[in-house]
Image (cartoon, rainbow, N blue to C red):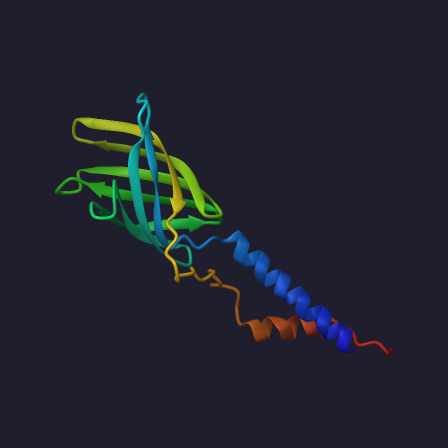
Length: 160
């Protein structure tokens, strides 16, 4: 019987790890480049994200001190999408779509506004902040004891 409980515990741990790996938590600072279409030189890019389940907010810009804020972004699996209003009255915008792979993300930005439009490729890497480890996003998993009870209820005890 002890073997069954040990197996169930290991199975539950593997399931929680798999779910945590499938839904990256992008909260934190990211640095990299924006390669505008038709130009040879990459421009610096810096993003600060705050993820709450599938909701994303934060700011983007060329460095940490020059940032434009956004809200209403979305995280769907390993994909991020968000729009950053531009101009004093929000008459322009930057639409960003990214794909996360571990501590790196790549994607595209498309911007438009009065008299200006363009697009480019973005590549970002997580900025490592010593002593701060992002927490896995476990929203929607339910309680771990409840999941363990469910798994254990499916295991029939057998005589040793």
